[in-house]
Image (cartoon, rainbow, N blue to C red):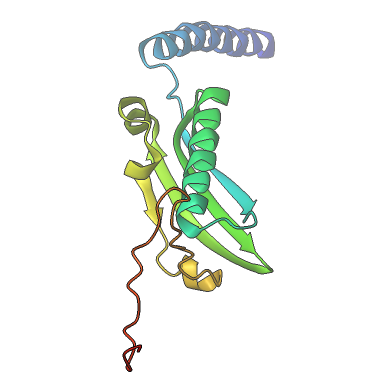
Length: 155
């Protein structure tokens, strides 16, 4: 009798295994695994160049953020969102200047960093950058000079 019971258990196990494999294959064919996209974060640090004003520095930071976002999307197809933080160093002071946070779809439709960037208002003061707007007169233009009037007439 124990030999028959052993054969029945083995037969039962074979039947269950033979049913489980096709069911598993069927579920994988009908509902494939979900692809998981993710966000990548890039931290960039740039130094202020000598005689560079704040607006020029911002343009350079935007260009660096644009390149980093494009490179992140190009390197990994599973990246759905990119977040780029750009910090600037000026004479020992370090401050975040902008954050570029964009999805792949947004970037595909409009790859403009000014559209998707968030600028930090206090960065200019944290970097000790005053308005370096110098007013220079071009070399070929002479300013109008009005002679001062003499208080005493010449005789």
